[in-house]
Length: 106
Image (tube, rainbow, N blue to C red):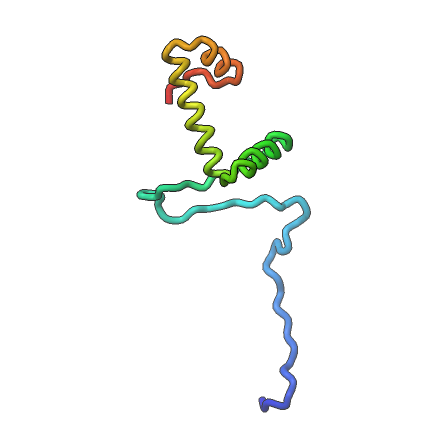
């Protein structure tokens, strides 16, 4: 074919099942390779109550923290309050129990 000729149009059929049917917007993430030696982990939360999500984002952003930094601080806060409760602080123990954060063996 010379340069001044138009290329002939062609069609290619789409693979079966494409596009996905309505409501099939679920996403699956598959990690390949090992996580050995990795310092960080990706976490995805689903079905978080809207108000809780809004408060979480606002609290992290208001402190200039990333969501990961804020979650890390919350986990550390829980560990410290747990240590107080285990050391005999009755108010800390009651508060953790009210929140469903009583001592568990992991």
